[in-house]
Image (cartoon, rainbow, N blue to C red; front, side, top):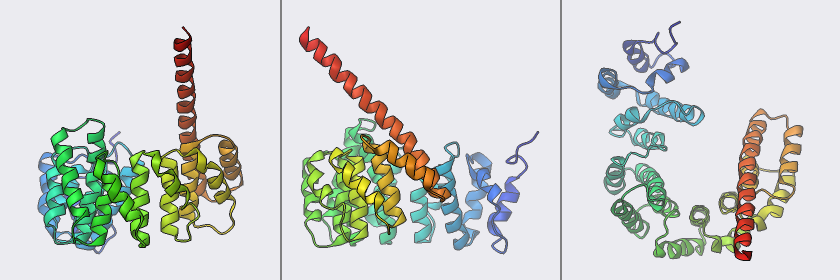
Length: 326
């Protein structure tokens, strides 16, 4: 039996992209995966004629699909969109490449960070480079490539560029173990600007450096939602056991922003420990919100991984003790 994808010709796909008077059929989204050769070239030739509104909506839909379906691959389409005339489209194209580890993207993102006329695009490029810093920290890319990325982001963070671009550069640098990065994070944290403080907390969470514990704990009840949100996320990323009780208490609060609530649930799944599983299971039993239920189920799966990791750590400690005792 032919698949749904096989029933859609490349000409049908291009015609649908160009027809702004008709909503783009959702089932066509999968057809844009793994384009190559003549089919990719057909889309490339049609791309300048597609309405900007259609492009933006399309890239947003493809990003959502890529988050839920790990088998789709839109990198080559996204690379076409990197050259678009519309800043919003270029920015969306960068976001669509969020999982790509292709090294040839590094010089492209560095160029966009340095020369793109849009601060939105420069900020997106800075964010995208964060993944490659992480890859460098685990020795998955050449040291000289890592150094070039870090040098450029540090220069941007210290520059007179738009605050959004500089903050995204700092957030990307959160993955870096370079000595000077900690002082950049500290300086941002000590400002009175809520956006800079939030970015500093974001970077702290990426650092896996528990010396930031006090700063994170001090902001778990911050009155500014963006600061509280990043502190909650950082507590989970750093696996701060000292934050567990505070996070459990936050879940019990009545009026609560959904983003704060979801972040708290996920951070607890990263930390684990006493009362966490029982609390999440109770919330799951009580909730009538399908989105929240799905989020909690995913968090419980993640909690199982966390608990397995803790058990392995204890096993390693026991084995080490046996070795010491002979």
